[in-house]
Image 1 (tube, one colour):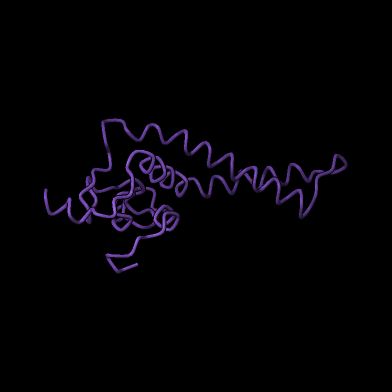
Image 2 (cartoon, one colour):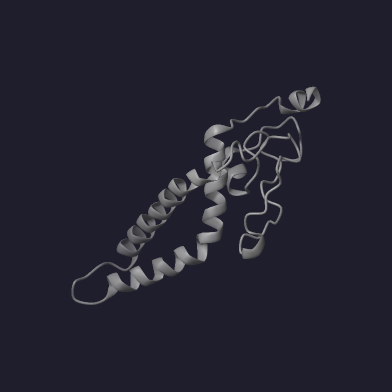
Length: 139
């Protein structure tokens, strides 16, 4: 990934929380999402390609929809996995065990999901530019 001429993978850049324009610059100052005091510390611009992260005031309010979709997807995935591996029954409390484990998992993953939703939401509006270095030199 260090070669400037190679095209970084889309999913790798999303999950490693890189800038959507160059897929190389970090979107957050602190790589640990569970440091809750610094969870949303972001530079104003990408250190690699100078892409502004907050495109307009209040831009990241839209990430609530992405976070909701991620939460639903995780809940569906854990339900299917629980149903296939353990099963559901009306005779016992397996459904409530799944519900409790799912709630714990979502609470634990929430800081990471909130960051991930910012990266995904920004990538809806900012597309990958393989020639970002030429544009940075022009600015």
